View 1: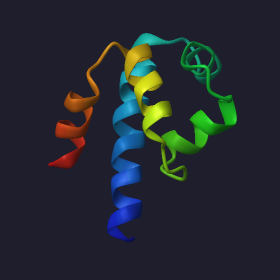
View 2: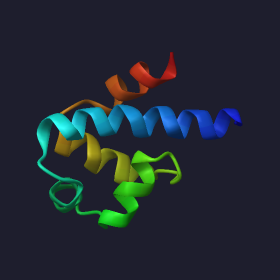
View 3: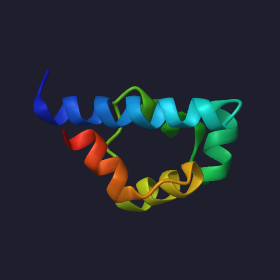
View 4: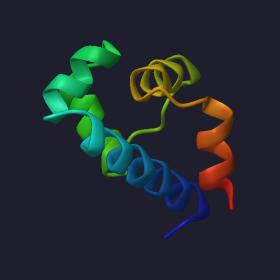
Length: 75
């Protein structure tokens, strides 16, 4: 697996754990983020490169700072 793919998987795993604790479903999470549910599924599987705009909406929905997410997955 390439390093680029590794980071997407790591981000997806982190977001998935946070979202699972806060939302009943991926559909609910996607609606709060104002992102298509299929996009959320790809992000959680590490298959979607996330734009800064979408990452910001995801962080807002999860009530976490983007800088904290990046620190957590950057290690």
